[in-house]
Length: 620
Image (cartoon, rainbow, N blue to C red; front, side, top):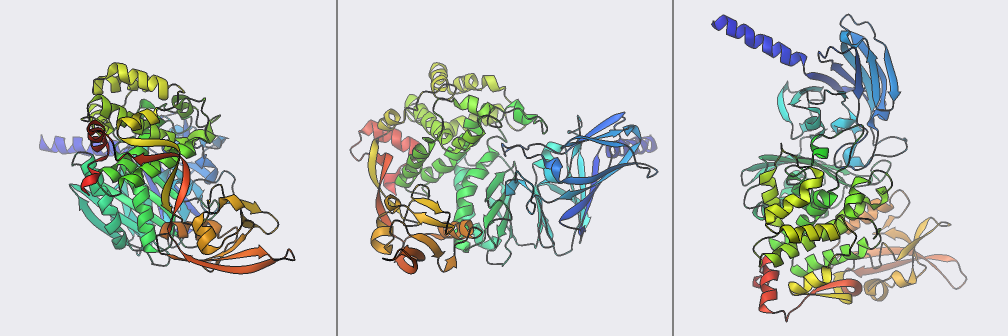
């Protein structure tokens, strides 16, 4: 009997292995920024097999067509004979007589160093370099149609001095090989890997183990230095979520670019995953990087709640080739962005006026977007006709959640808000249970106990196009709303970098508008309308360096920082001359629209609701 049991277990193991994608990649063998990928084909017994790389992946909200980076795709049988392969579209390869298919090979090009059009957002892309490899796995590995749920085994040979940082389970390997395993293609895509020098730091937040893995080309920024700024925001989020995080491990992977411009597109940012987030940022002062990571982490880390624990069937069963969009971006991105701001004031990491200034700025920025387009409709159509409206999820999306929070606090006399709602939704659904798109609003009504009020709120402001009731809700919580008001903020540049500049095509330099210069720029630096920005902190501002130099300055800006600017200014003869301007950054009064200010004469009832919403800030 024992022998029979061992035989049955061995047979089961062989069958499981036969039903596993087994990939091999050798990082030691790269050529022209390309890797060769090998796949032992699972036993699928299909006459024809359709192999895909994704058109789109979760969290990006753009169609990128990762198949365009694949070349020399070939399929072989067990004897090594080449099989017939068709390439019907950019993301698909059809293998005929596929019952005999045993092995596939192809080359994949990285997405960062490319001249292909439709450049991919770097945190969603791939990099192939001798010092650092970035595997967003959807850009390296593929799947067979209808077999996305089979397990994956990834074997990577690498230089011994590189470390493969990922949230995915490492099940084997040695000094120069890593073996990772996961249960499906969705999970594989959800776990990026960065291979670089092993600069790591590990710490605990409650019961959750946090890993920081950093690639800093000059070595200026260390993972250990980032811990001091990242840990407090995670601790605050743990308290915000009721004292326990919903994941047992989490990885921050940070790629810092020395040159700026991040290869071709010059974008920077991060992409969230269930158990990790991947960052592409400009390398600069460690303190500035820490603050940037802290600000971004406040948003990205909250995605462990939504969409990890709260998501619709469109996300749970994501279609990588023909994706269908959920109508609830107000929740996935808007709710996450609101929580990222709210946690900081609620846990006393920032003062109340800073939070209000941030939300005030979102009101102003949201005005640039369509007002006759409902948020549910925008969510469903953000891949095509309303793609230009997507970034409103971080603006009006956050404002929707702010108003929902205040509405719930008002209805419950302060005892229930969006914090409670996210916890209750997570309990009802969770990682393995998805909701139906059309049922979410009704479910929120049931969970909160305010069926009628929630039905009205979502019908008006999310499924409808009525303006958010920000002014009236703010009054209820003791906050004054003013169409125009004066606030005091740090002047980072001396001018409005969004609306106070234009581009001088003749000189190929940024030109200042007369009405875009603030009090610091005018009275301290001495900036004038028509000045061309030539050097910033002694670094020349070219088309290639502009975003990097200005981005690094913005990250490190603080009150008292000495700033040196060289401008080109016309003299009496109309000729440009260099002029060096200096000053220390300071706060200045700025007139803004949609100002939100604390009402110091609020009633006891208003103060009670405000305290329930934002915390007891007066005790600080």
